[in-house]
Image (cartoon, rainbow, N blue to C red):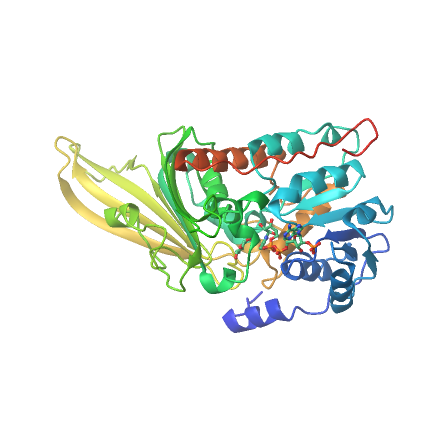
Length: 440
Ligand SMILES: NC(=O)C1=CN([C@@H]2O[C@H](COP(=O)(O)OP(=O)(O)OC[C@H]3O[C@@H](n4cnc5c(N)ncnc54)[C@H](OP(=O)(O)O)[C@@H]3O)[C@@H](O)[C@H]2O)C=CC1
Ligand SMILES: O=C1OC[C@@H](O)[C@H](O)[C@H]1O
């Protein structure tokens, strides 16, 4: 089937075709909090899903929830978050609250028997992550499903990108994201320590990408420079960071992200250029594409080549780059550069050098090699919702998932970076769920 071009695809992302006929037994979602993002992350994807409806919303201020419900055609408004999760007609809860409230409301929702789609970062730190993802509530028979909403993982282009990597042989990976200040200047939660804000928390994506690129957990954080908010703002809050971690295969992963960036971007930062690795402090406007850039370098591989004389060898080094890893449905690009040399084995002198370049894109699952139907205008959130529903219904999905241990390790990697930067890890909530029957 011919794929729509850039303009048609983006028009359809903004104005998706009418959704499918709904099942008679849909998964009924309730939303906790009326943050701006829920329209994109749940309401639109649900409209495209035959088995999902958004039935309810609750906010601290009921009037705000009523306005939100009216605007988005949501039938029920509850007085409080607690009332919503206690309603037996609700099957699943989407938690888009400030990060400090994630643990409490995820545990309360699970205890009420609800499946939980939980915004990233899952919680405030690794201690909280263990409390949540190793909760007995998740080990009970027919336990509810819990998913940290790392939506990019579910995108076909991310599967396609990973397929080009040889994870054990990755030596360097650099991931950057530059959120322009104009996107965040009205935001507040990201810049306050006590609600578990900070760039390492909010822009936790690059850290997650590194863990997926290496297919391993880092041994240590080897450096972490942060840009802190200035007084009278919260000095314990980072609005940008640039950190490196050492992975078990000896490779180094570097993530650098900023929440107060510019619109400037670089599409192709080759790690072959030493400068591209060494430069780019958190404020550098050229430091990365607004919606994320990843460059991955591999160890060199000696390739058999019988046409060469005995004293020479052929060596290939692969670099893979991804532009726009967050909202790549709008547009993305994957570059693969295979750098070849023929060299003398004795002294390493290069006899011949060339590069073979390729590009790849995957706007649908089939383009990523997954034999399932999908539409080029689906965003990451729709793919994520599909997998969530597949889990709830006990069906095989694409195989892409974010496990509880994955989410725990993600928080460990963030904590490591705060410790290295000399900032406190984000505070642990005092909330504890009483599984003997009471609340807290
Ligand atoms: N997946 C994605 O693409 C994105 C994910 N996110 C994630 O969503 C979550 C919310 O972030 P964001 O959308 O920026 O936040 P918003 O400001 O839009 O929403 C946060 C919600 O938290 C609730 N809240 C409860 N207590 C407080 C408090 N003390 N101060 C402020 N809000 C409070 C509010 O609920 P109420 O309505 O009841 O007042 C509010 O609706 C974060 O975890 C963030 O990482 C954010 C953006 C994009
Ligand atoms: O998830 C996110 O992605 C985009 C950013 O602007 C936002 O702050 C963050 O929460």
